[in-house]
Image (cartoon, rainbow, N blue to C red):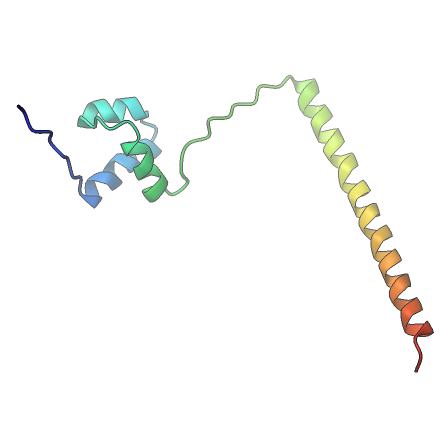
Length: 105
């Protein structure tokens, strides 16, 4: 019966693999290059040692009209939120003022 080999990697080796990932190498390419068989091994190293973590996996593809519409809607929402903030602040201030004026001295 063959014994299972447990591989231990040095910190410098892990950092080297993560640096290559950050330079653009893919996970499968790195695993093949260095003979790393554990599926989540390199991902765990990236979480621990990478400057920015995993590369973005979300890719948003939009037509120019869609992107412009999103920008328009974002510009409309911001002033509305400020208006609500001013409205609630005004209500709070008036309540506070009334309590101050009407409170027994």
